Image 1: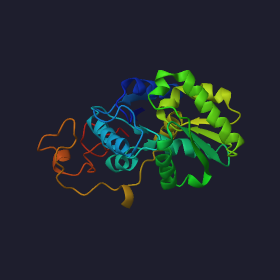
Image 2: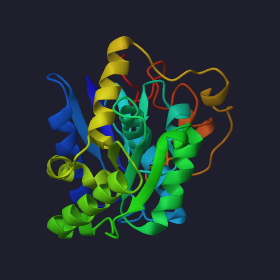
Image 3: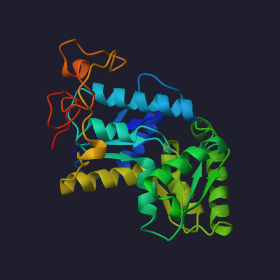
Length: 271
């Protein structure tokens, strides 16, 4: 089984850290491929960067030259999961929803601890859209910027652990969810500092993706995530436009040729 784990920002070192955490969680026989978008922001901490990341992630997946069985979007509270689900007929897991879903098996209410306060509304909106908001008692900001998680991991651990403790004591959270893909490698240490279960979205997404592939399940193609109508799309994919005769250039990126197991694209997922 091969799973693409796509970072939402363009920082290669963060992609490598996310991929390492994913490999540690993966079962024997699961290959983890870390992908970094060719364009976008070095860290995603707002709406403009999030929407740009959604395009960058789709572009990176479409240009991947091999076969794959599932895709993980490794950005917490980011846009774009729906586009991937429309493009592909292999399972697509977003770490925001993966972390929240697993937390609900572990306790009645969970709290998310994320990076900067400006990202809190984005996370709240994504949890609301996914239907997890009723079980989320709070989304707390650690005050650490995304890039600071790598630059000063010890300070990040302290800030995240402090907010996790506040979530348990004040918000009555029973589970903590780490609200950033860049926190994946900090999860074990934060777990040791916490009185409740701590869920990392990256590792949760790996196990969920493996389960869906193993069960032979993938995204429904009726209505919401049906392939987009065929039409001409100019300059797509961005980084490496397809030839004029390519189905991707002449039709919608949601056509069966664009990254689905049923199509003829090199990015087709293997069943």
